[in-house]
Image (tube, rainbow, N blue to C red):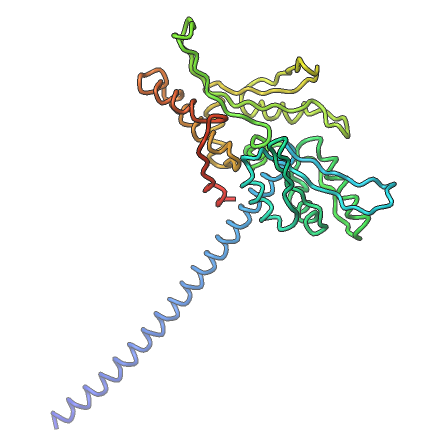
Length: 329
């Protein structure tokens, strides 16, 4: 009898244990499912944020690039032939990979080559492409060139039954998006200066400069670029000057940033919002030299050797180009 009781109790115990394990398994599975759902939700939100950030970076970069080296050709209203407007950005021939990358993202248009000028032009004229451009840069423009976008929007609204709102000039928070990155890729340049004693200088001097030059007035509206160039110079902690071209008599706004405070601001900005033309490669060399200056190592023997090496292999002296950074656009 004791044996039978023991067997019966063991059977009951086993059944109870099975139920407990089943409940535990179900409970664990429910918890696991909830955790997985939360993780998937977090991943989805993160992906959406990343996509939104990438879109913002592209839109503001394209806006700055256009306002530096772009224009929009509008067909004459009196012409009997019907032509679409053309959105154009001109590149030095060495920046053809960037032009092709932008063409691939936009999805419409072509690249026109200008061998005599050693340049190529990204041209977008299909209506779908023009609408894509408008969607990207409307609300992101900061200069008087916005009048050209307004003319394009008017044309699209009139000829294709659209009702796109013309958003105003963007102001402030220039250090919070990629607009300046695009503008510098168009109209900026990085240089390293080294005045050597052996060249007759009284004192050795090493400096790094970011220079930006832009016309004073937008040709269609005749509005001045003073406000936007002042905003840039304020951000970069330097002065806004005017340069007169001797050969033509034309005047341009110029910005030259070279102080320690300027160098620090520039490095911080481009760490968040990189360049995408070949100037990215020049900037990375320039950044190394600027860092030596900020760390007071530029007048050491090793510092001078490194400065000279960087200076002698950038800008027009550059022979090697790596375009891996375009994968981030």
